[in-house]
Image (cartoon, rainbow, N blue to C red; front, side):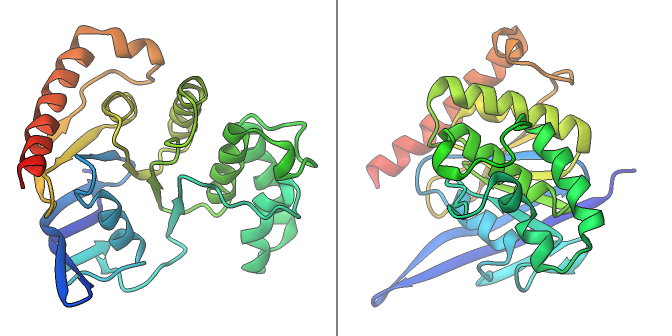
Length: 260
C-alpha cells in the first residue's frame, strides 16, 4: 500500500497588505503518496506557489495543517528541496562546486558526496562541463545544474516551482524529457507547479486544478498514461482528451477571475 508522503488538510493562507488581508488559498486538502509525481495547475494568481511555499516550510498556514511523513511542517528541512524558476547558482563556483555546495555545508564526507555529485552531473547531461562556470552555460544548462544540486541532497520530497518557465520552447521540451528520465530512475515524491497544461499532463501521475483566488482544489485528475513517457505521448487521443478537460476547467476559473 502506498504511503502518504505530503498531506494538506483544510489549509488556508492569508497575507496582510497594508490594512487589507488577502486570502491566497482557502480550504486546500490534498494527499501526495510516496513516489507520486503531482502537479498543481490553475489560472494566474490562484495560489499555486503559495501551496508549494507552505509545503517547503517558507510560509505557515493561517488555518489547517501541512504534514510530511505525518509530521507537521513548521520550517524548511532537508527532507524537502526546492527547484525555482531561476537556479540562482553561485557565479564564482564551477558546475561541480555548485552541485556539491549543499553537502559541503552539511559537513558530509567528500567520499560520500563527490561520487554522488558526479553521478547526478552525468544524469542531467553535464559530463564534461564540471569545471565550467555559470556565465559559460546556457539557461537550460544552468537549470540542469540547479536540479543536480538539489538531487545530490537526496531529499524525500522535490518541490519544483515552474522550473522551466523561463526557458524557450525547445529547451523546455528537452528539460521535460530530462526530468522524466531523472524521475524514472529515482522515483522521488514531486510537487510540481506549472501553468502549462501539456507540461503537467506529460509529467504527472496526478494533476490538481485550482480555482481562481482564493485558491481551492477544483478537480483532481489521474493521468493514466503509460510510463516511461516520451514527448510523443502528447499526440495520443487519451492525452488530448485530458488536455481538453483541463483547459475547460482553467478557462472557467479564468473567466471568473476576469469578472471579479
